[in-house]
Image (cartoon, one colour):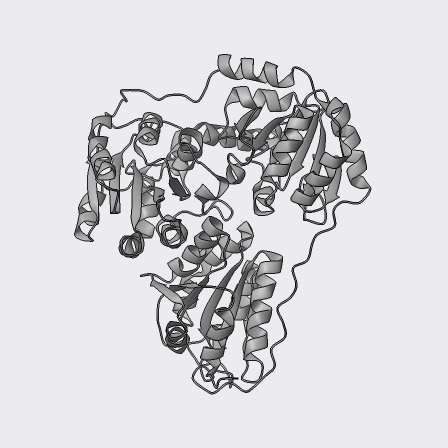
Length: 552
């Protein structure tokens, strides 16, 4: 075995799992980055440590391949914590390689990094000279098996020391989740007897590769289909209703509410998906198939712990053509055609700024068809899944939603830009508040992306707070942001850009796309803060109802 330093052995073992590393160099990780460079790993520098894990997270969401983030110890590490918490809560496998206190004991400036990570739900694997390779492999295998973020900590005094020889264990064999056993027979009978079946797929179904089997199952049953925002278009085809939850249309939600048997595959049934308890009818039978060990929502009547792909294949084998629910899809087609779609927006607003709904519609017609969308958190987060064509589930990367954060969009776009296939354009949708939080990594995106478009919904405010609290009479002064010329900032950093005050101003973006869409274009879109997103109204109404129930 080649003689390597402790940092070099970490890089060597990690290199059998990843090709890309994102981060900021510092005292605690300089030897690791030196070794990673020599081993041929691609390092994408970011300008704030908070971007290191966010970029690696988005790389996985876009490509399905593991990536690593890296920071120095102390402040470099603590700067990465919000993105680390988001990855844990979103169940994204990601590895943070960081420096740590010396093995001989903490220095005055050190903090208990392992305790901090534990508070976020992330496990820390601290390497030693005699077992650095096996500990690194254990950490990576844990991240992949548990779908979570892990920290590989390199004590400062060991980083440049020679690693001791060790025999590395073979990588763990992939395990296959139980296929549901006899419970699937009960599921098949319920589906065969259903007159208005619905199949609802989530990100777990997408990650399992279950789309083809679930679509065949829906066709066999004559079922309607839908997806969560993270499984958008996975089941697109005959009978597809679109997104389940606040991003969907009321017509589609009404049809979902009339389903008598609902098969939920790989979806956790979050409050947003369930429209805060109003999505499914009270008499519907809800079946959940998931790799979790127990139901993730009290509405579930029958739970099967299984892989969505293998379970759907077995259900197909159990059902025959007589199971088709006659007329259900025809009725859905008729009602969807007659029912209202998303509000198209208005040509004029009280303050003269753009209606974000009209802007989103116009952008959909301009943006390249082969697009991968990164969506930051904020009031605007529904405009892309509601109004834009998102070709595949992996083409919508919604960041910050698990941890309810904003400001990770630019960092995530860096990782997604490194992961997108040739010929696809990365599109980042961000608000002005979140964009300012991550502004340092606009330079990182410009450096990393071969083709990227940044759409800033610039309402000169923290829009979610305006609608939640300004509408209640609280002072709006802390909720406002001075008008920022993002177009000027973008040009100074080397991007093409334009201020979009009217829909006709999108001609500048279209010209750039027609010229080849090379590099990065920033569209600084001046929108009104007077339009409240329907999902926000739904959330506010649910909170108000919950308060009233407690008070009553």
